[in-house]
Length: 396
Ligand code: AMP
Ligand code: MG
Image 1 (cartoon, rainbow, N blue to C red):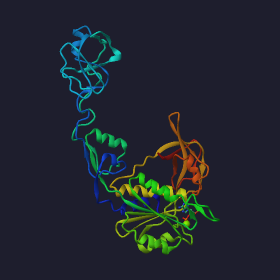
Image 2: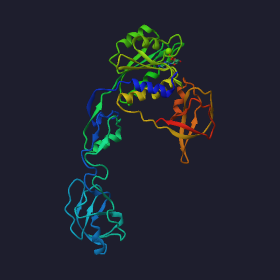
Image 3: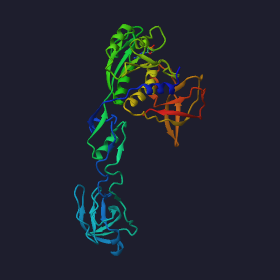
Image 4: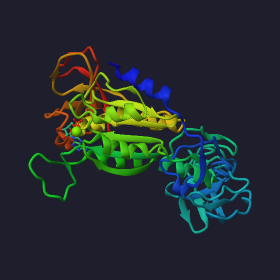
């Protein structure tokens, strides 16, 4: 059985990354991945300007005029001011251009204004409250490398840099299918032995957030013929993700069908929850994941396997933020698999704390309402005591 790292490496080695790109306006590029490097079109700031509402002046004039200067002219946002007349101060507002001849801004709270005369503080420092042209970035600077997943902050930055549209990799088309004779949609009555289906919705929504075009393939019964019929006509998808039917019970139909129509790369990993998880390919460019049916296993394996695969498909890399924390309670276990415990994380006196939540069964989706991260336990570990350092993965 593969370790987590081995299974992840096997996936990354097998992913066929996207070959097509498209151009999108910034407003439509949230969550998409850059296909090219992106460069600034302008300097930021584009010109020297004021960081405060106040007065622009030449610092050399202050001592010469006893720190009192007459006000002449005004610089406001959106237009170019006159040159600063020698021996005067100019009214100026935040973001307005610094007039030629000025080198300093004094904020209005620090002056005494009497009519058209302004008294400035004696400790005024040259260069104060001036934002210099290009102190953030310069026209032509490379802002993003290819493979960057763009978020709202990135799109704001690109907008400020004068970039109107970006070239991004196309969205992968992903088919999501749940399997199981027992599964019923919420809103329907439950007959004996039935349960409400929940994995498909979570998978579809997680895919959307990751920039994929998720297609709902519905629920199929535990019938190889039905699954075969559905999947055989699905090779135009970049990914197929199934849930359930992948364990070693009598109904492990997913493995059977994937083995027939494609090539299974691995079908088990040394992790908990989520041991019965399979990955492989149909043809050269359709990747499949058979995720476990237990709801928590399904979510954990999505994060550990599908997410990095999607990033790789976009020529990118999944960001992983693992943080040390102090365990608020202990947890003992049998070594052997890498384990992900649902946990509550919080900050206390400048330290991250992590509490193992009660209810770690892989069917116990109820625990998720208190979960904002995982505690990760190494394969060989027997657990930890309260007060020990643990490794955590926040879920943001
Ligand atoms: P399986 O992997 O099909 O053996 O399923 C393992 C467990 O997960 C069983 O208790 C199933 O009832 C449950 N399960 C399977 N698929 C789903 C699903 N889509 N939503 C919720 N529970 C599921
Ligand atoms: Mg099943």
